[in-house]
Length: 258
Image (cartoon, rainbow, N blue to C red; front, side):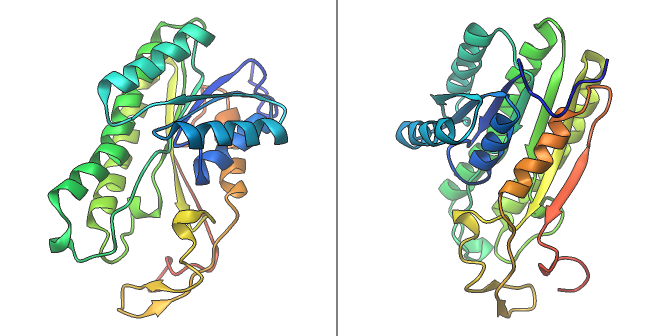
């Protein structure tokens, strides 16, 4: 029987980086169709504020659990709490991520490189490991993992080597997870986002460096659109998968030569 994508009733989702930006928008969208959503991030105060705000505007149930996705012990404890409280996990959104200052590649410090690899790539890998273990063991078996790849998973911006490297790697992780998970009814897909309105993209209107060396303002789209796309991806039955989906501002300088 096909799963009703209009309702997440009885379904459990975990959203990393769920307290701000795109993660919060995705959480709000899931809650609006009655998912139970666990949001996680490093800052407990930010998570708790987000959980209160989400609870006031949606009908679903929200739980905030602070965790550092780059730390294996913290991730294991996070998933054990989810398992103990809910007994299963139906959806993991690997959304947590950071960027580094817009500087030339040779000026990026080793510490900055390690920090972005840890948050963007290692974190997604560690959470995927734990999700696979839980989804294979639970009854009914299976679930879905959606990775936030970003437009940078295919097309870099100037001075973005660490961020771009992690997002290219997320594509490889997505494909490997889709392959290794399919015998166990675990689907994995990726959403690549172009200029959704968040704190990270607030500078777009004022102008950002382009590949030709010029600075130009770029259009953005509401983060709600990303939540809507995730609702579609998450609502499919597990015998169907959106492997890759791009949601972008129509007029952003990506397609063609800018």
